[in-house]
Length: 148
Image (cartoon, rainbow, N blue to C red):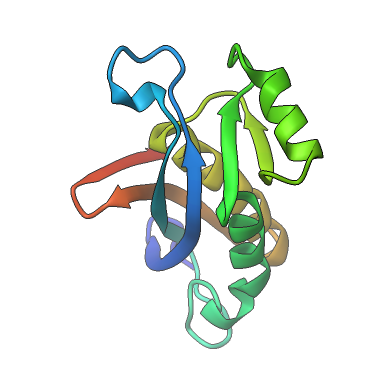
């Protein structure tokens, strides 16, 4: 196997609809708002598997589940949001399905998806494959990427 060769495949995964806010923004982004998020994941390897695939797309159901469990029909706030206690109370009362992250926005969502997908794909391929980057879209005009 020539280790200079690199194969790349991509998969688009619907993350689902989530609600979040940027508490420090001076714009309307400081209010709760939501998007139907989508991610595109770039998988990379030096050598194809026995089927001549980078990854088996059919084997990504658990990754899709991890992504959707984190984003679909959730409210995501930053751990330093000044209203964390209010959101925790709303969650306890069944008003929202809360996720607390280091930061919010598609840049931080792309980073989370990258870290999650990279750990997952390295494990299921015995380190043969890795994730090069992930792009997350809020909608067709806004996206952000994270990767190596």
